[in-house]
Length: 222
Image (cartoon, rainbow, N blue to C red):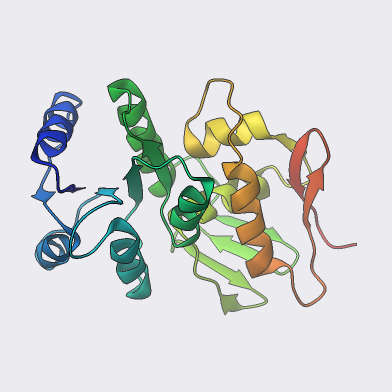
């Protein structure tokens, strides 16, 4: 679903995604998108931030407040890092800054879809101390308590636990989780590691480690 108030940008997105093999539906603002969602279940939403009536932030907040975890790519003309951080914090999976390169947009969409939907090669049950991932049911628990994660948080935790005890570089995580295969100064990995710590570093567990200058790892409690 494309949610964009500018007709020209909306048409560009529609044509680009069509060429890339995607079917699209369109909404010109957040309210129209909510109406469309009553009868449609998109695999992913591309949402512009600056829109009348209801901006992209409010739309994503409404989706996540109803436990709608549809993956979201946000489009922004703003390069303010606080705006980008806000979008990720409320549950967006990635963002692209306008004007954007068509190839980058399609690559990022494919990367979100790849990490958001279950891999058939990953182990179905992973554990690390109090944390358990049941991939068959797409369920994460901490000492038996179910924990809600966004698709990106889930994929990042899954990668860490699949390679438990190993130090994973930021470059590897950017590739595995975000599909970024080029050199990047992105701090998105650090941001999402902090989200996971807020949810799992409690009751004496502090297993998500930063290895300075290298990357991250998850460890069993001593």
